[in-house]
View 1 (cartoon, rainbow, N blue to C red):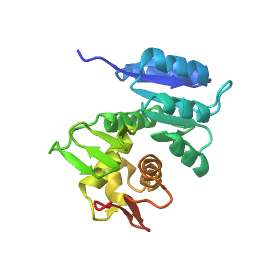
View 2 (cartoon, rainbow, N blue to C red):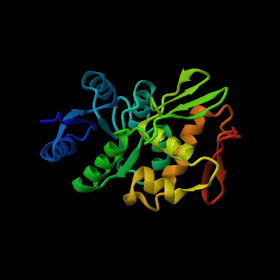
View 3 (spheres, rainbow, N blue to C red):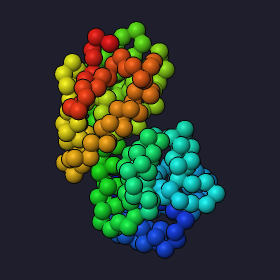
View 4 (tube, rainbow, N blue to C red):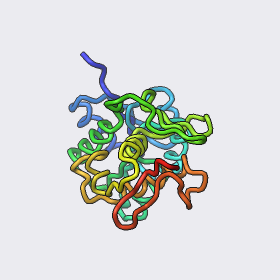
Length: 232
């Protein structure tokens, strides 16, 4: 029998964490609960979860800071969970390194679907042709090792960031639309959510571009999508 995937739930609402633990346990996950950001960071180190469900409004250390602290040490997928469902909060969470965002109130089924989608994206698959996809004097994108190096140093990309970058590189020198990225990286349930490719490309640029405001590798085709330039 395969090991259960572990979800770390960090939320100070104990009624909600109890409900999530019961529901997600019944759907085949192992659940670990923490009730503030500091406790959540300790649980992250102790249990090495496959996914973190992270509330924003918490005492001691809020979800924004906890997300930043998690991203300093781990690329574990993160789903932000908050009562504040406005656009700016969602963008803040995704910019800080979250993989997805679910606003309260939500159904357990909705959260499970989002969690499964994020976990599915985190299961990295080797390209059909294992080869070095791109290399120049600065950047190396290695299909054999599924890794990226900048000036010889390993770049810490999350699984979703890797999927976005590898898809763009695999279709170098042509425009990849927002819709195409959503379909092939996030899945059909995210069609129309154009903030996701925009924010994930922004995150990738922060990590691989010398000057993210004047990108050398990933250029924007305004209103349409992106192009990875093989000429660098």
